[in-house]
Length: 222
Image 1: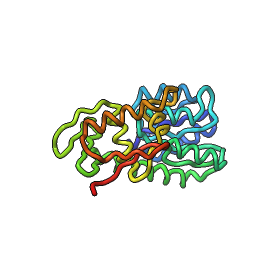
Image 2: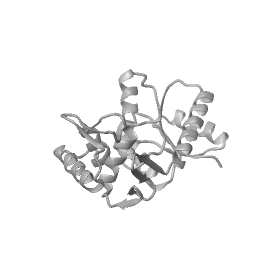
Image 3: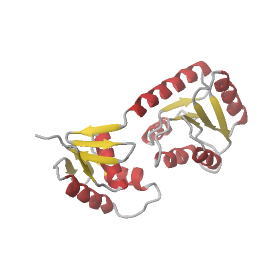
């Protein structure tokens, strides 16, 4: 049996055609009719890929994607009639893996599903990321500096991971709040500064650079 796919789509005809096509190509497929059901099924099962509509009942696709990205990197492909540039940009800002507009070729959709799954499989092999003397184990959430274990909280770990993965880009405070604390956090952005201060104190390395009024980035040893 191939990869395990969840389709979240309220148009029954589209949903069933997708299911039939993917099943005939060796995939195991579940279907959800709305966003809330989609979230429930995502939490109950270990999917390899999610095909997600945007204008779906109860919880729209953007909200579903945002909630899933708070805790998982499971591949998400938006499949929608909306071909507006704003929606596509928003989808990729929410870290979707691809965006397919209707009507589409089923053969082309299959190739894009295969490409996303292949990329995800390769990324899964990378259980560690490194920056200079820092090594993060993404499976055990542990941090090592020159081979010595450093004790970071989960949020501190996620902040450091985000800075490393986005290097050399600047990561804004708002982006860190949104991705780590979640879209429902309405507190002061200074909570990010407090966590950065703790990370600096623990790693004892001058890698984290403040970009005034914006956020943070990393700098390499000079």
